[in-house]
Amino acid sequence: MKKPGSRALTLAILSIVALISISSASILIKATTSPPSIVSFWRLFISVLILLFYSIITNRLGLIARSMERNLLLTVLSGFFLAIHFYSWIWSLRLLPVIVSTTLVDLHPIFTGILSHAILKERLEKKQWVLIIISLSGGLLASYREPRSLAGEWVLGSILSIIGALAASGYFVIGRIVRKSAGLYEYVIPTYLWSSVFLAVISILEGRYNLLTTDLREFALFIAIAIGPMIGGHTVLNYMLRYVEAPIISTIAVLEPVGAGILAYIFLGELVEPINILGISLAVSGIVILGITLLSRSQQT
Image (spheres, rainbow, N blue to C red):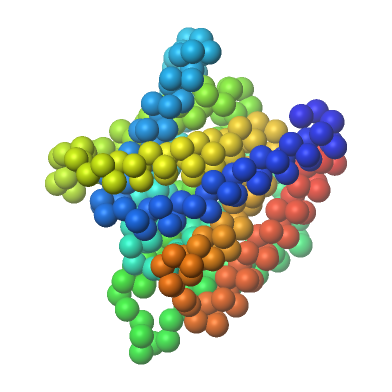
């Protein structure tokens, strides 16, 4: 991915793969009946098993072990952020319409951009700050409800989605740091593994000591979530982190609310108010344009 033209083509192909994969996540998760901690745990743990199997047959275990030792603190922290991201977002999906929940959690490029500006010194220009303000305003409208219908579940769900967005931004920024010196599998396997550990602890703290379920349908959904949204979505995005800025990677996923919202309407019959649609449009448009400006800058450097 050294030539600009070749890099752009590869980025486009990988973006399509990731978008198709992650757009199905909300519907698959809505179909599960397990608590958020258990759904999140199996999503990550099954992914770890799949990636470990591939690493064994490709003789990568030594590299992974050395990376775990070298980047221990960063991968533990990244795993913690990823655990909080999935736990809070999946909880929000139990409380909000799919398109609202995914729009709010997909504000993470905004927070990723701000963190990258502060930590990685990937500076934001004035026009990019304007786009951030527009997107955040859209997020507020997306989560708006008339006072008479303002339910506690809606407020809690919105807060959980924002927490998920903040956690995702930390996960992406740390990934950007580690991926500068580590391969894909050396980063994602330790991160997913630590995240699984944190989610198992959360489940135990909630009083759910048995992570196993005898429901074959539920396990089939866990496997589908791991292979599609996790391997085809998050792992592909992590692969791309080595080559482009963190805000660009997190922006690629921002069209998820559109695809997820369409699927939710078709399969779940979910509808939202016009003001929510306006907010969603502003948030998505702002982040997409922000991503385009960052991509243009990245290709010039």
